[in-house]
Amino acid sequence: MSDSTASELHNDALVIDSHNDSIVSHIRRGNLSFTGRSKPQLARLDGTVSLLRGPLEAEAYQWHGQVTLAKLREGGIDAAFFAVDVTKAWNNYLAYALDALGFFLADISEHPAEILVARTAEDIRSAKREGKIAAVLVVENSDALEGSLNVLRTFHALGVRSITLTHNPTSWAAAGNGEARSGGGLTHFGIRLVQEMNALGMLVDVSHIAERGFYDTLETTDRPVTASHSCCAALCAHPRNLTDEQLRALAQNGGVVGITFVESFLDTAWNPIRVPRASCLERVLDHVDHAVQVAGIDHVGIGSDFDGGGTALGDATEYPSLTAGLLQRGYTEADVRKILGENHLRVLRAALGG
Image 1 (tube, helix red, strand yellow):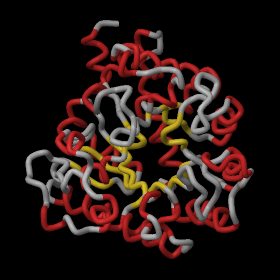
Image 2 (image 1 turned 30 degrees about the vertical axis):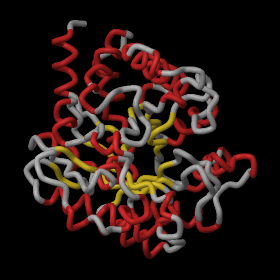
Image 3 (image 1 turned 45 degrees about the vertical axis):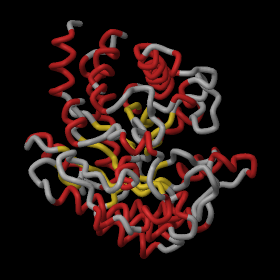
């Protein structure tokens, strides 16, 4: 397959990245605009995220991060899930989430011709036709709800379309993967949360959740779920990764796993600093291959975790290398389209109900 053919396919396909942590990253760089054209919004520096987290270290502060609108365009990414991880908000979870989402909405509102908030699956299709980037708003860690389903409804009204039930610690909803030895599954609140998300039309995200909670979620939900940024435990025995049994269960649910670029999830003994960039890409593709073999071609996508540890690819501009790599490994054009975005869109449509 020629480079030109790979490029044409990538540009024509619907490309969806199911996880980044770029909102908080941009805030911690002094409220740096996603457009890259406007100056930092200094008047907003006293927000909750800035006060609780402070700026990034000097070296990281100067780096413009892995996701901007220009980088998404150069990488051919049509839609991205912008997550706000509230785990480090320390009893200020709701205010932290609202501050971060408010910053992002204020920033992108100045550029309606370039980016829109996708409230439905069709919004993603429409955005691509109109040459815009679609942003799916996500809250990572249900502690942002402060134990209230009324807050969930408010987030939905704001445009949030997915909630990650836990992070590594235990949340209101369930034990995270960092608490896996406790054996904790969904709490009573977690069960009601999944049910209410189904009713509202929101995508349940099971990345980070401990194994028992994973299966509890599949037993509770009546819609497909996502593991937005996870890899395969068979290739890398990290507690954040999914076992083959989990991958098969996810497929039976109709869901999708977004293979991520976090090095420690790709190979526990692997140090990308000493490995050529091409080898980093190959390891990502190894996990894609395994997930496809176990779960099936309809249940695998990409979830980079850019600006949150996903550095096996440098930034969003390197996304086309995934398409070229998949073609080189013998995937058909139809299958490449599924992995790049069609699988994510199908699950999002099923979860949102339209």
